[in-house]
Image: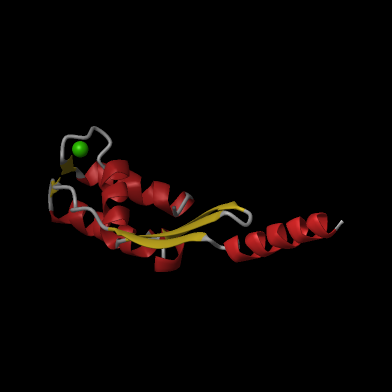
Length: 120
Ligand SMILES: [Ca+2]
């Protein structure tokens, strides 16, 4: 009986010692280069940038958290923060419907209407 008690005690101490044994926290900042884009005219650029500034996600909405845990043994927490360029690149991708690298005034107006209906 003494041996069994000793084994349980050793196992309990081992498990307590291993709590959070492997713990990894990371914060990743992503801010890729802005995609190159041209505007058909000044009005197209103005409409695009005004719409982007009004509907761009706030910094808090550009963050995501991921956690992976195996109780007692392993835990990993990842925090991803997206920079301003991510929102810009997504807006260009949405706005430049024919993907020719030039945003026309028509595309900018359609983009503005879409963003007004569904901001993000
Ligand atoms: Ca285009």
